[in-house]
Amino acid sequence: MGNTKIAVADARVILRKGQGREFKAGGLWIYDNEIDKVEGKFENGDVIEVLDFDGFFLGYGFINEKSKIRVRMMSRKKDHPVTEELIERRVRDAWEYRKSVMADYIDEYKTNYTQLSCRFIFGEADFLPGITIDKFADVLVIESLALGTDRMKDIILDKCKKVLAEDGVQLKGIYERSDAKVRELEGLERTKGFIGAEFDTKVLIEENGVKYYVDVENGQKTGFFLDQKFNRQSIRGLCKGKKVLDCFTHTGSFALNAAAGGASSVLGVDASDLGCKQAEENAALNGLEKIASFQCADVFELLPDLEKKGEKFDVVILDPPAFTKSRASIKKAATGYKEINMRGMKLVKDGGYLATCSCSHFMDEELFLKTIADAARDAHKRLRQVEFRQQAADHPILWGGAASYYLKFVIFQVCDEI
Image 1 (cartoon, rainbow, N blue to C red):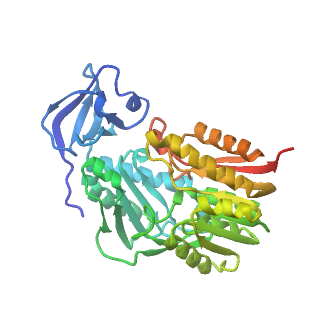
Image 2 (image 1 turned 30 degrees about the vertical axis):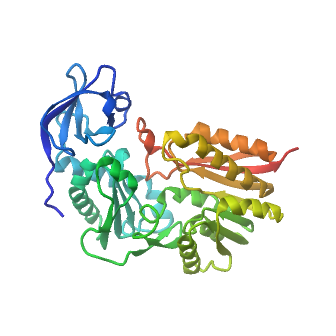
Image 3 (image 1 turned 90 degrees about the vertical axis):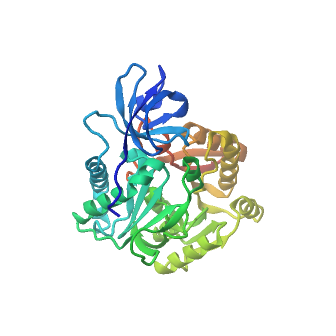
């Protein structure tokens, strides 16, 4: 790393009149159909200027003619061109933000900056579009999804190492998980592997006082979902002495928080055999294997089976994967969310609790809550909302950048109709 240079082209994008609405509202994207013309020579991935229809300077961004998101903006100020200094400022600001919003968490769990696991860089929300970097203790995992920042990733990672070292964090290694299919929309190949020296990709972390092994090589996304950190913590008090069902458990994070909160028994369910095995290993790591058990099964098939058997739980947790990754499939996704929530409610004892969420930004807050209301009506249940939550603060929501607000998490008390 360290030999990459930022390619700045003598070129400019000129918008059509009245276009660039999302960018002007605070976002960072310019779409292909918003552009009137491009002047000058450039290569895809180069930094170019962006001008409004009347020549007014709007900022600097990197262009990619292979993507419908034609320009991803990096700076809005004429005197802030895209340089290594700008990137270092972005990385430093991102780290200082995490230190600030997680200060109470660090104190509560008596951790330090090396042990802390958090989302370090959250793409557009940290003004570094297309790049996600998760910090799992002393390991960084990077996911690069946009051509421009992909070409800058060595610089970004060098700045991450520099900024972390100033707080005494010496990294063990960096692993790349740029293997998402969406990279192909940018004209990029899918890739994964070590950046720099190799290390054991089974990384031990601690979150909310619970230990986990994170498989950064083969786990989903970057290996662990850090965005639910405080939501997992929030269900603990509800689970004390209770029988709990955790659906889509992945590697057992909600299940183990329930067990650590004093649940009498926890059943975690996931369709992934690897996920269930990792969940069992994590339960044993925390001495919770007698409380938390795991079953490999399709949740959509298991829930009706449990209902037929007359099973009831004090707490049911639904943490499904995103059922939609495009606007075109929202209707189908809403059907899936309604089905699992209706089934989940029927398994909750009268006066028990349902914790349910959606991690798709296309499934917006209004539609998600309406879908749950429809499920409650069909299940003949009454809901009392206990709490509405979002993604953890290390995943900030950029107003104007709709994709950065994706996680909705609600806790309800579920009551039989009266």
